[in-house]
Length: 88
Image 1: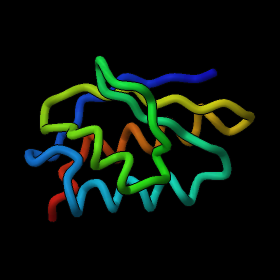
Image 2: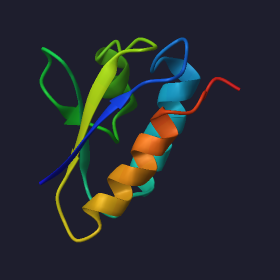
Image 3: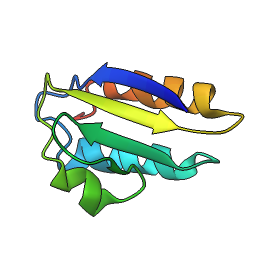
């Protein structure tokens, strides 16, 4: 199991557009990815409702997890995405 701890850069956190961009990228991955916020159970990174339900705010940390041959590459890509301003 591969993991990444990432600080969300978007000022508004993972709401609306940033969440949609993240979920789209996670859905394109060849393996399931979960995302979790401290104190919350991990949820599928492919579910917009689940990601929005985490109520992740800008500057908060999330944990991404994936398992499989391409897990490291997928997590690197998704972690990089979360460090960008996705509001634009």
